[in-house]
Length: 367
Image 1 (cartoon, rainbow, N blue to C red):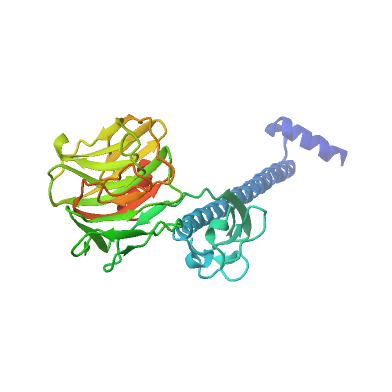
Image 2: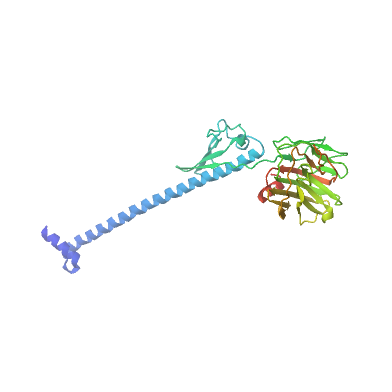
């Protein structure tokens, strides 16, 4: 045995010292060493592969959870905008506000949604979506599970929204939650096909829509939005006005034809007036939206920001009125005082904050 060990040692030092039998032993030793190395490398590769698969599955499960919560945010905001319930956007939501095993994102993927109110309890599916302050999404990719929690940052609804879709009568419903319904005044037919269903048709003589004491109106920050088509471009024509005239039409959006047939917006005083670049063409539909944020006044035409000016110093007075198709006087409550619009007006909205350009585009599209 001692002799064989000596032979092996000699073999490791020099192949020349090896006999045939010792060479066989040496070969077996080398082969064993190679097998050990190969087995070790194979084990490392298997571990690395398992770790890579686990990471990939984890990422995929997170992506499923994130996609689920983004879809939920979109639908909840739509439900809030429409003053509806969770189940209006998620018909599979029944009872307490959780939905399980949704499969919108391919084979092997599923997710659960839960809707929470501010105190951490679940909002029932048949409750108002505006109660939802947080959404939890649990995503699964095969057996890997990941969760995402997000807060619901809701966009405030208009404080007045006259779609002017009634098609008959003199009543104009406010589609916001403020109940600022309007009333037609004037003569002849008031209805015509508009951008979205019906629109108001104004004769330029005595037609207007009016509410003497609207609620929840803005004071220094606001947005006025409308679709308009002008028949007659002569003289000043008011589209929508909010607030009594206290040193200027407080929050009035107007077409001032003597200014080159352009859209104008003024807030509180002529100092805050901003004018469009667009030259208005008769019998053409335009979307016009004006915003004030406390510092600047912006005027958008067809979704494009055309001009900005420093905001005027005035503010919407207490107990304001709201009118479409005419200017408001300084009386309390205010009354229509001329500048009658001649043409069509559709989808009038008032917000008590300044809308962003992205939101202006949403208003323009009817969302």
